[in-house]
Image 1 (cartoon, rainbow, N blue to C red):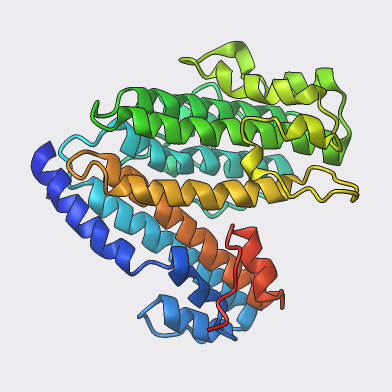
Image 2: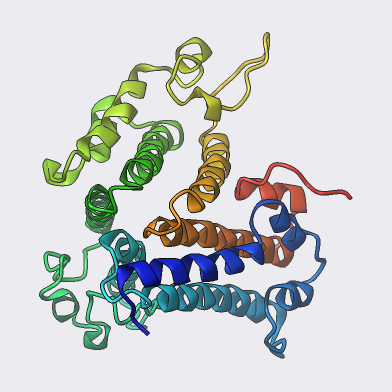
Length: 343
């Protein structure tokens, strides 16, 4: 039932707080990695009966069910608002962008099979019933330019344009959220977008050995459009002249707290995976702190989405670790959890 902004904010804050208390994030996330089988993991995460299916199918069903539950819960909270703030809808639109990527990939491969798409109705701007007509799916939407399936050598560039367009949408939404929390929301997103661009540049250099000019072309916003979003790639460009093994340059970096440790006398090289994990843990902790700071704005629900998506990542990592027999400590590192609880 939709309410006015004040009533909805109070109700959502109370409901979201209760949900977070039961979530597998922070110290509680470790419990996901203490179970020994996928069946145990299912029973820990869900109250629904355990499906009678093979283990590989169970892993896929577990991850899909966790995702669908997360989306369903968020939709119920968002629809409490008669007019949800743009910052809340931009979170959901992440799935429209990912869905159209999946559609493009499926049609590019020519298998004719409709991919598994996330239902965010009634807030989707893509017309999913029009599948497989890409032009009809995107018509009248912000993605109307994506009017055909990409060719094999176009897919990367079109996906990259989608990423930047979503970044622009999210940033514009942050610029127009409640004045009480706007600066904190902007600061949170700003650091995330900067780190994502730095990581992209690092991966292009380290794993694909791309020269500077090519990397620059791949980290700049296509067309240079947006409200101040060019600054996100500027930080990444600053790092392009630093050798990947030059600790002295990297230690002076603005975000050096996320670097993998340097040991005197030992050869050091920057590790993008370490940076990603260190940042992710820090990002979720900051978000958790921000959740309680502005209880009567859209900020708590914005934070709830980020925290619960982190929980979803934790569940997926735990599921994959069991399916592939990956040690718990290694799996936890992939989602930014640094310590195993041996108690």
